[in-house]
Image (cartoon, rainbow, N blue to C red):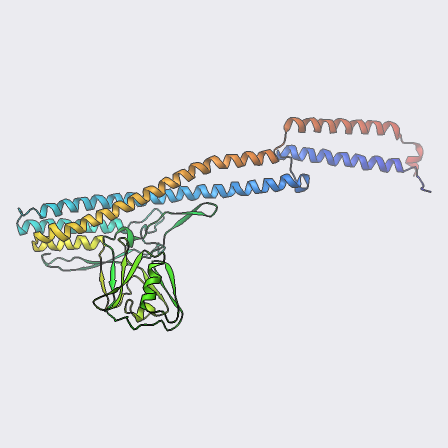
Length: 414
């Protein structure tokens, strides 16, 4: 039989009073935090939903920042390309003037001097930096000046040194920004594509008809890896290159029976060996040379950059060769203008996509904030009512307990 002591009412009263005080404390904490979920145990399901909504909000904020940054980088690139296009338009005017046949050789030389100055200006555009000090057109080598200049004397320069060669020493990497789940957008362009006028061609000089791949290997063209297998002949290699995503077409040169590569659009071919296949075929030089300056000495490389076209025009003006000025030189400048215009259009298209993505993110973020608010927010009117109810009942409990459990003399003597 359960024994009931005289202290049991006191214990029960103390327990319920402490329970009511804890409830009051919880209600006050929720009021102070302005949320109904102070701890996950308050509502596990709502807590899970809220956590996912907040995570999505944080990612959307990061995506919005990425879009803003990418648009800024594209804006810088666009401004530089517009300046470069202005330079080329002036160079074209000089080429058209020089081809008219009404100017003396001395006057053509003066035009050549202006082209030379414009060449330096275009190099400044190509080697431009952004606000962080990174080069705009150097790919992933952001701290490496993308175009290296060689100076020397040429015929007609009247003894002064001029730019005689320009080499690209960046890489083909493109900066990418994540603008949503599994969605990225490029925001930089490599200089050996933007400032290239012609489709580059590489003709090996080595007969490849009897060649066989000695062991499984691979080649990498413009960043696309192409796997080759033991026993593949040159025709299998050509088929694998043409069947890949690389913007290059391969064929067998009928003159030397050698491998020939040609870009599908104006750019510098970026070829690498994962093995020694292209070296064996005479396309690349032996050793650890990295692209793009790794073509074999015996290989013939055609297709120049925008700077090559300007130097060709300058040389033709210095020599007074009006036929070359109005022919190959003018065609090279037109090709250069077309290339820069195409990349300006690409930048505009990417900026439009980023603008649309930014608007979508700006709409989506408040929606997730609203959903999270529905899960977490506290109804203040209801919370105040509950808090007042708890306070009144607590006061009533204390008053009732004071009347029921009156202290006696024995309570003080114990």
